Structure formats: structure tokens, C-alpha cells
Length: 64
Image 1 (cartoon, rainbow, N blue to C red):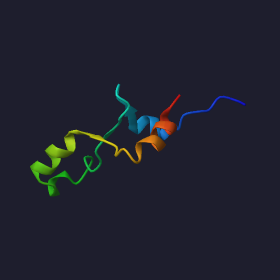
Image 2 (image 1 turned 90 degrees about the vertical axis):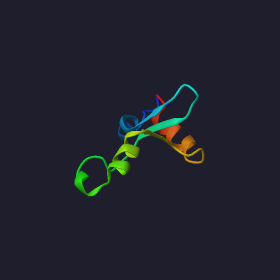
Image 3 (image 1 turned 180 degrees about the vertical axis):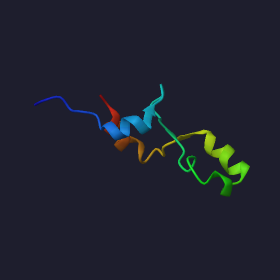
């Protein structure tokens, strides 16, 4: 059996922390920023983490 390839799109959007959590950047920070409040934009700046129920699927996608 050949080598398994990682899912390219997923590896660009998600990364793993040392403890195994799946780290992601929030969406909705590209355009139409004038419509969003400063509080909302500030909170979207922070790093997000995938829920524990979805994490195993994405770990498998981004594994090398």
C-alpha cells in the first residue's frame, strides 16, 4: 500500500498544537469589516480550537 497523502486544503487551514488540539483561524475577517463591531473583530482575531468531537477527523486529514 502506498503512502497516505495529507489533505492539502485542510493542512493550510488547520494545525496541531503540542497537546494534540486542532488550531484554526476564525472566519469573517476578510471583507465588509465596516459592518462588524470592533468587539466582534477583536474576538475573531483570537485563535480558535476545534471541538473535541470533530478533532479526530481533522487530525487524520492533516496527518503526514
